[in-house]
Amino acid sequence: MRHFIIAPRRIGVFICLTLLPAVFLPAVAVGADTNTPPQNLAARLNKACAEKKIDARLNALAGFGRSLSLSEIPEALQAADGLKQMRERVVLTVSALERWSELAPGEAFARIAELPEGTTKVEIIRTVVPLYAGKDIRAAAAAAAKMKPGRARNESVQMTAEIWARNDPKAAMKWVKDLPDEFPKEAALHDIYFIWVHLDPAGISSTVQNLPPGNSRNALIINVAGDWAEEDPAGAIRWAGALPQEQDKELALATAAESWADVDPVAAAEFALKLAPPELKEQAVQRAVERWATQDPRQAFAWAVKLPNETLQEGGIARVFKVYVPVSPEAAARWVDELPAGQVLENAIGSYVEAVRMWDPGAGARLALKTVDPVAREHRVEQCFSQWLAWDPKTAKEWLKGTDFSDAVKSRWLSEKPSLGY
Image (cartoon, rainbow, N blue to C red):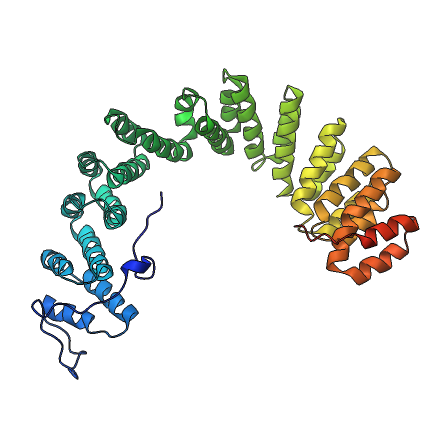
């Protein structure tokens, strides 16, 4: 949940400055020395209102609110009610309440809780709850639970639960579960789970697997497996392998292999290669190889091209090129050129073309030209040439002249509208 603070430029229609009613403050005399330090609240507020430019006045009002002492805040809030324009009232009210939240968050929360529902209340709640909860989490939780129904209460409950979860997720979860059903319990528990899972993936693992099926549960399984595997791959894999639902098990094992690859890519890839069924093996191998490629792409490529299964091999090479080709298309092309003739080379050319055509279509076209199968060769070259023609038509056309494609094919490619796809 993001923490928002109202600033003059952000609340648009609410922001402007007005002259205070004459009955409230004496007018500033023309030519008066406004640089003289004001001695009391009325004089300081009057000085802020004397600014002629709107932005300057609003900034002055906000600064005035932020400079208040605790004893001055009630008077400043009363003064805000006397301003003529709504945007002025909002700026001064917000800044004064934010200042109160800093000095005495419990008192400020009680006052804010009584405000009518609206933007001002919600924005100030977002300021006061972290301050109040940081000082006394249980008092803040009790105060949030006593608020009147509305968006401000919902935000207070969710923010309190989130803050509490950073220190004691189990206590936060118990508090939320004990709330009446009309509170935003599901949303608050969602926030708690996703904080807890990063703090202690092993600790939340049993809770996660007992949650009802759905996107949140799947996301939490991914987080448990991923975070746990970084610290304890063996423990994460034991947990993942023991999950009763096959779909959960496959999701967790593939994620654990990918995360493990950050720590030991060789071990993670070899582990993924032993998984079953074939669909899980393929997914885990590709994810581990891709993560490996972010560390040592040359080593990951060398491992992938030696895979005995063509599907795994092709997928692994594609994942390496997905990571590395945008970084260094020339080096990746040299790796492909070094491969012996055969199906591995053919597949590698296809993966390279797919990865490079949006970065260096000329390099892709030149390597695609080495494809043995004539149908695949024409298709791959056309993919790259269309992009190349859009970016560098002169060079692309000169290159095409030197190829052995038929005049009909060349004419068709030149007549087609160049691709600008990204």
